[in-house]
Structures are given as C-alpha cells and as structure tokens.
Image 1 (cartoon, rainbow, N blue to C red):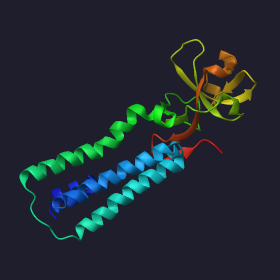
Image 2 (spheres, helix red, strand yellow; image 1 turned 120 degrees about the vertical axis):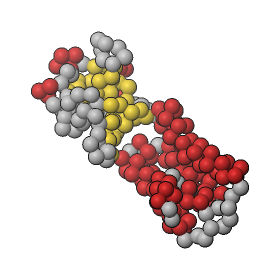
Image 3 (cartoon, rainbow, N blue to C red; image 1 turned 180 degrees about the vertical axis):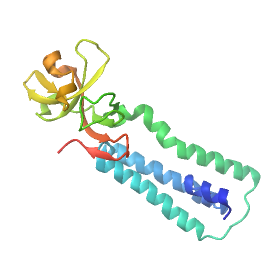
Image 4 (cartoon, helix red, strand yellow; image 1 turned 45 degrees about the horizontal axis):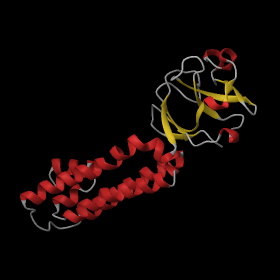
Length: 217
C-alpha cells in the first residue's frame, strides 16, 4: 500500500474500503461510529468517565476491525469518477456528522455542559486547562456535602464559578475551593442560593494527558 493511502486509511474511518472499491462498506464504518455515539448520548452514559472511554474504545475498535478486514480484501474494481467523488464526499459528511450534530445540542441532549478551568482555585482536583463535564439535570435537593458544583457568580452574573460544597442547607450552600489559599469562595461571597447552582461536576478531563477522571463516588 502506498504511503499516502496508508496514512489516509489509518486516519479516516472507511477510506480503506473505498480504496478497495467497496463503497457500501466504506459508508458502514462511520455509520457505526454515529450509532455508537447516538446510543451513548441517548443513555447519557457519555457524561461519565467510563462512558467516554467505552464510547471512544468502541469507535476505535470498529475502525481497527474494518481496517484489518479491508487490508485483507482484494481490490474489487476501480470506482467510476462520480462514485469515487461521491464516496469521498459521503465519508467526509458521515465522519463529521456526529461531532458537528452533537456539539450544539449537547446540553439539551444530555443535560450536560462543558466547563473550562481557568485558574488553580480547585487544585489539585482540577488544574488550569482541564475540562469539566457537568450534569445540568442534577436536582438541587439531591446535592450533598462534597459535591462539586457550578453556579452563577452572585455579583457578576453570567460568570460561572466551580467550587466544592462544604455545607448545605435547604436553601443555600456554603462552598469552598480545594485550593483554600487561592480561592474566591463563600468566605468572601457568602452562602450561595440553591437556585444559583447550574450543574454538578461529574467528570474532569485532564488538559495534559486528556484522560477523563470521575468526580463522583
């Protein structure tokens, strides 16, 4: 296999089948990835660290199996130019469809949102550059001491703040940053109304090794 074909077939799911003249099999590979992501989204399993790993592993496994299978197939026939162009267009659309369709509706579909950590106020649990997956469907009544929550800044509305619950009452929570030496929290802001809480953090994805880690026990 020529180097360019090898690189493309390794990087783009389904391309090897296209090189082998199996257009329908080429479309099947990204379709499996879309179905996998749709299933994990529908069950909200992807909001957990385990769910992310399972989803990515399943998509990678489908690609690896299809690549091994395609590598052992003999070339079926040369596709006509229209079929070749159609195949490339379809592969591009299908491989981009899942993330493009998922991203704008992730909060509505999953009841979750992504938050970026800008400071070290929650170190060592979260560091600048980490990404937090938070459950927006979490009922305030089910929150407990130790949960990490995202809430609207009581003085600068529209600014999200992430802290850990230190104390909780029927109407308010007292929150602290894990890095108590460098954290703007309830020691300055006072108690936070439960109505201001937007979500509960469930998973953190490291900004260095990109591995997800659960924040719930």
